[in-house]
Structure formats: C-alpha cells, structure tokens
Length: 542
Image (tube, rainbow, N blue to C red; front, side, top):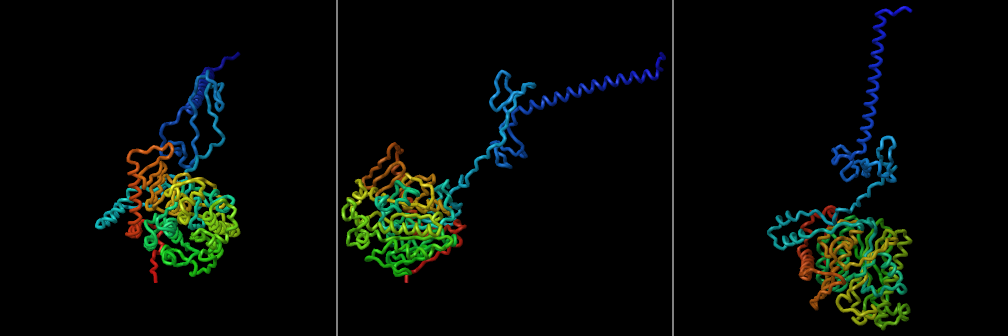
C-alpha cells in the first residue's frame, strides 16, 4: 500500500489532537454545570437573610407590603439521613436533600379592625388653650383638668349601628322589677333580646327633669328644675340633639303632659328639639291628667316615621303616682293586675306601667310595618325610681329586702334593635353612661373626657356615683355609713376610697363649671368637624 504524504499525515494528527481537546473541554463543562446545579439546590435550603432590602415586598413580620398576605415559610435546613422526613417533607433519593412541600394556597392574614388604636376623642391643644386663657383661673383649671384625662378607646362595638334611627324614652317611674315575661312581654323582650344591664342605676337628685336631662345630655345634673333649664341654655355638643342636628337631622321631642311643666317648652327648643306636648301641637285626652302613653305614640309616630332618618325623644307620664285605684290610669288597667298577690299600692303601680307596655307594643308594630324595625335603635330608662311607693312597698315589688340607698336606685336600661345579638353587661353602670355608649354604637364623634359617664364597652373604669355614694367594679361605698364594701374576691389598695372620691368630686365640679362657663363654646374650634353646622341658640321665655 502507498504511504500517505507528509502533509496529509500532519493534517490527520492535528485533527486527532483537536478531537481529544474538544472531548476534554466538553467533559469539564458538563462537570462544571453539574456542580453549579448541585450547589444552587443547596442554597435554596439555606435560611433567608435576617433583614430585607427596601425593595423586598416581605416585611420582618412575614406580611407582604404589597399584597397584605403571609409570606411562605422558610424551608428547614437539611437533616441527617437517619432522621425520617415529616409528613409535609420529601427526601430526594439521588441527592439526599430534604425539600419542603408548600401548600397550594396560603391563608390571608387577619384584617385589623378599624377601631384598633383609635379613641373617642378630639385632638385638642390644651397647652395652647391654657396660654390663651392665662388670665382666667377657673377656665385654665378646666383646661388642665381635661388635659389630665385620657379619652376612652374605641372597641368592637364602635359603629355597629351606624346610620340607624334613634328613639330615646324617659319612662316615668319605671323599675326593672315591673318588667315581667307574662305581665309585660314586650318590655321583657326588649330588655332580654337587647343589651341587658344587670347592674344599672338611675340618677336621682332633681326629680324627673334631672333624670331626663341625664339620659339625653351625657352630663350628670347637679340640681333640679332651675339647674337643668340653665344647662339647656348652654352649648352641649355631645347631647343626642346636638349630634343629630350636626348631621342635618331635626330631632323631635314629645311629652304626654302639659307642655309648660318643668318649662319644657323652653328647655327642649334650647337643646335643639322641636317640642310637642299637650296644648302645644298635640291634643291628648285621658283619664284625669294621666294621659295614655300609647296615645302619645299613636299621635306622634306619623310625624316622623316616613323620614329617611330620624331621632325622637319621648317623656312618658302614665306611670306617675299616686298609686291607688283613684288614679284613672291605674283604674283603667286594674283587670290586668288584680289577680297578683301584692298590696293595693303595688298593684296600682303595675297597672300604670301597663300603659308603657301597650305603647311599646304599638311602637314595635309600626316600625315593623314600615320595614325599619331592624335599623331603629330604641334606648329606654327611667327618670327615677318609683318614689310614690314606700321603701317597704318597693321591696315587696322586688320580692327581696333592700336598702333605701343603692337598692332603691337599681333600675332598668334597655338598648334594643330587632335582630341584634343579645348581650349582658354586668359591670356597674348608670344614666350618664347612656350618651357615650349609644354614641359609640352609632359611630357618632364625641370626646369621652367631657362626659360624666363612660361607654360601657370601652376600657374605662366603671364608676357609678349617686348622692348616697359610689360603685366601682371593686365594690361600693356608702357615704351615710362611711363604709366601703368590696365585692367577692376584690382587693383594693390603701387610699382607694379617697382616690375614687376625688375622681367623683372632680367630675361633679367639672359638670357645674361646664354649665357655668359655657365651656364648650370656649373650645368650639377643636370640636369641628362635624359641629360647625350646628347653630347654637337660646330660646328666651316670653
């Protein structure tokens, strides 16, 4: 065979060398790729850095800044092969690496309620007010006092009845012991299917008018007829009438008694109501001067029920003393109570309260017919305990002995709307608690520091103060005996009585000064919005 030329041999040898080189390079490249892939898989199992850059959408608490959803959990580090994998882990047979099986969908984070971190109060610069009013010692003292207080926090009940209608009722001489499932089923239903107040006390110091003003103003009146009428001439932005006027809703007030009694014809227009009563816009007829509570509802309800939204106040009178069969209202309802095993006075008292039962039955029927029962909040309490009965007769009605101090004033408060979730409020409460509690339920803006009571659903300390003493969640203090009685299991620190007494005295003084100085007009710039549209005015008697 003929040998190849030298030139051809060189070419063949070069090809062989290049082929070996290419094969070696290819092998090296494949090894490098395998190493990189293996190293990357290990990196995916390592823990994430402790901190994140500002661009990274996951915050330190694991909540996405962009989506608000929880971030995926980090994979656990690789473990020894001797450890069996968990249910949600898989062991790679080739690499020995442990992988973490992610769920298909991650649950959304719980939303934070709107009320968290918020208070029922306004941002008031008291330091500036103190400097402005430096020449008026009593006004400065008021600024300093309110600056020392913390507003109550909003809560899960804030605004749950926002946009609802409101009906307030000051029921003449009502007591919780008159509410019975068989005798007064409507009142019983409203009490037990609404917010049920187990330890509620009615203020009493100035008769009917002070109990009524305490219900609708949020202040604890420090006097009777004269004090209340003077107070009504002053600016009270957190009263129910002012609150609804500020929303552009005209409040109405109705009374089934003579329109001039307690000067209501002056007091209620001053508070911001259109007021109607016997001989003033309404023609009542009834047995004697005790006009029917049911007639009160019948003659008034068509004046407001067609409104898009309304606020109405009622002051009933059928439950007034005297309690005997000479009382026309009692005599009219005698058959309903004659079978009861009570004294004549107690039976006559219950007969007068039957009119309130019939009135509420009719009111609920009309609200239901109109289709607004489920968005009309009804708030009812008494003006005072039935002082037309003796202490012994009140104890007879209650079926238990009680003292003439706190026991006499323990009473009923009803906050009810059809279909609501019933709830029992066990903490001590009293009449001035109603305005802050209901304002919070309706989502109305108010500053709790300026009111005598508290929102019963807030984190503020329960405090009931009456002429006879005070009650907290720790016990009760009887002023007449100078004795504090703790509730079971309660322990109070040294100086507790003095501390609470000081709080009570300051609250009473504050109410007096609010009225005397017309205090809210001095800080009105801090109470807007929504109070800028409220035109405060005074009705001067003719």
